Length: 590
Ligand SMILES: [Zn+2]
Ligand SMILES: [Zn+2]
Image (tube, rainbow, N blue to C red; front, side, top):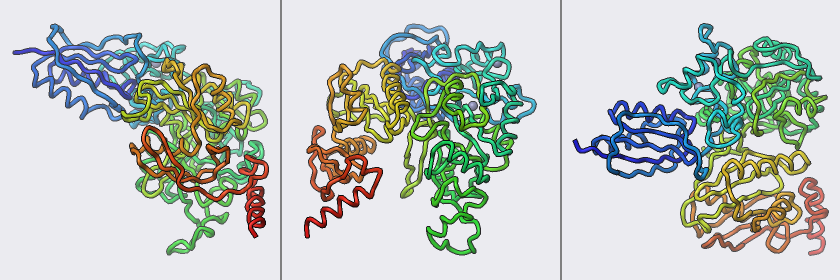
């Protein structure tokens, strides 16, 4: 037999998803010898055997890959055999450029869920159960490559049984970095508002459920930060939460134990159902079902929005809003808690309005003082804040409104032909709904949602996220891209960095991002109906039609008529100022 060696480098989201055990099994099945190893750049595979067999290996590698593995590139070459004696999984290699993808935090898989509700399983009711197909990732990674020693799980030494699973290539937990069990892993505690321990373990969870039933506000340390949880049917409690959080009208998100409960309060399309049960497990905006409507077609939006319509949901969850934002449990902890409660709860971010969510329990005691009554915490550190993502369905398409848990920091791959293909660019975003992004070669890594840069804490979170992305990917920044608005904190931050600064017009940034995401090329017409964008001429524009040309150029072909904005940006939040500006313009004309 003429023996050859096939060398393959796989790049993409292939770490921490059971890719190496899959390669091992596939090679074993085809009786190929060789090796597979992880490095910061991706997964390296070498297999030796007959040419036909190697071809089959390569095609099955792509076709039969684990469900969560995303292959972004696969390079292969046929070489002379070196005479491997067997197939082996090699230790992680260190060094080299860090371009491997970091996976987002993934909702529990069906196998793990079965285990936590199985009385005979050793992980029965264990809230930190995970495997290579699910569990925390981005929220626990401190550095690449993705190994236990580089995560916040490093302080938990695995017990013999967990260790056996971790080292068995045929086990679902083979190299599952956050692998843990009740004997060796993180544990729950219930604290009072001063941090005194009220109870531990499963008891802490059961007492939290009791507290929610009794109308208390529970601060829960989730996967990417604290959430505030209350009974969504209890008008008084929900109103109290609103008062304490200083949140006036913005709707609260709900969490339901099951899809069936969601269908009882909202209209759930097939697409919405897929989103709700997806591994990303985001908040999905859905139309609330009017409760006491006679049978027949709905009468209209106004009717949908009246108070008694949201079945058993308190009116102050989403005042005067026909929609509800709903999610299903996204971690084993949430599944266990919701299993104890047979009603929907409000699950909103653990913060004061406009501040980033708390990730540390000591910090939470301080910042959520006077908001939460009790704290359900655990001892697995959260490395970075990751909010719940928000999605909605529009025109039969999924639209991500807030990209965080389940999505961040997966990159958007940009096509070749971009200007400066080899440059590493840090983009620092605008002032409201900020995210930062880091372009390395063909990948744009988009940070988790950071929020409006209105408070000192939010600006702190922004600075951490920007530094964090660059550090994680070991990036040397060639350029920093920022908005043209001189007063944005993100623009000021960009000015302080040592890398040369490129200012990008606000609406053009929207249009260019949209083109990249949808793989569109110039010429293209972009219509930006945004709040405000600082224009090339220093005017704040509300809407612009931009014609995209070659090499990143654009031309404005139409815009809304100009009027004065009394108080500048202040007019964005106080529309009567804009109205005054428009009225003044009309008066002058006549
Ligand atoms: Zn799992
Ligand atoms: Zn264990």
